[in-house]
Length: 387
Figure 1 (spheres, rainbow, N blue to C red):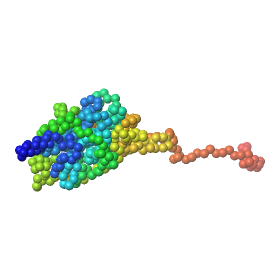
Figure 2: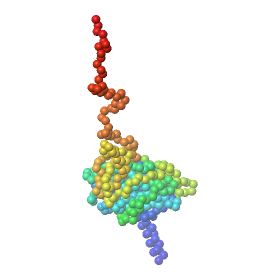
Figure 3: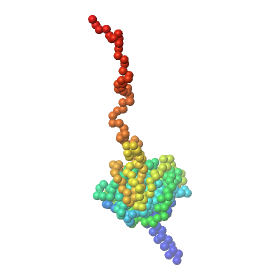
Figure 4: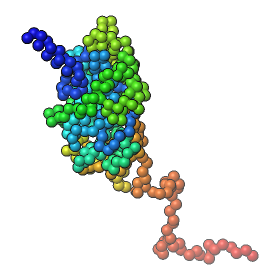
C-alpha cells in the first residue's frame, strides 16, 4: 500500500512538471526573484488570415526563468480574445497569473507587451460578424491578402518601460478596472494545444533561459506556435540582467541566495505607469461614433467651431475607423505620440489678404452741401489782374 501511494505521488508530480504554468487558470507558481525585463523585438508577419497575436513573456521552470516567444495562434472559438498572463508581486513573492481566452480582455497587470497590448485592453483588432479585423498600425499583416483591416494609430499614454511584473518596489503600480474585474468572472478557455506545445518547447530550449541569454533571447518571436525555425531574435534586452543571480536563484528553489539582491527591488522609479483611459475592447462594446485620430491633435470641425477627438476609441463589432493613418509600429513597444503641434488650419472667417491695420486709414472727404457753400467773393476780394 505504501509503495502504491508513493508511485501515485511520483506520477502526479511528474504530470505537474509536464504541464506548463501558463496553461493553468489560476496562480500556481510563486518565485522569490523578479522576472527579467521584457526584451525588444519585432513582430513576424502573420502566417494566414484568422490568426491572432499572443505576446511573449517570461515563464518559470526547473532551470529558472525562460522566455516564451510571442507567436501567432488560431483562437479556440470565434469571438474570443487573448488575455496575456502576468507576474504580480505579493507578500514577498512573485506570483504568476495565467493567460486565457475569453469574450473580453481581462487584467494583465498593466504590462506593456506591445503590438496592441499596451497595458489596458487590446487595440490590435476586434471581432465583426465572425471575422477578426486587424489594426495594421500594430500588426504585421501586409504579407497576406486580408480584406478586413483598418489603420488606427495607437497612442501610448503610458510611461514606456520594459517592466514585466505588477506591484512591489519596481513593478507596475496599477489595479484592475471594473470592466477588467468583470471579465475575470466570464467563461474562459484555457490555452490551446498549440500554445501548450509552444511553452513546453521553449522550456526545453537552453537558449531561452535568462541565465544563458542575459535577457536577450535569440528566439523572441515566431510566425506560428512551436515553429522555432526562422524565428525573430530580440533586438536588445529590456535592461541589465545579471545572469549569475538568475542561475543561483534557479538552483536555490526560486529564491535569491544570501548576499545577492533581487533584481526587481532595484528597478527605476519610471516603472510607475499612468494607465490610458481606453475602455475594454470586445465584440459587445460599440462606440457611438468611432474616431481615427488621437487627442494630441485638435482639428477644426467647422469654420467657426473646433472639436477634440477622443484619445482611444472603443472599437466594437459594427464600428470601423473611417479613415486610415500612416503610422505603423513594428517594434515590441509602441512609441509615445510626438504630435505636439496642432495641424495648421485656415478658418473661413479669416481674411485671405494681409491686414492693413498698420497703414493710416484714408477716408474720402464728403462733398459740401448746398447750405455749406462759401459766399461769393466781393469785387474787392478778387485777385488783382496783372497789367
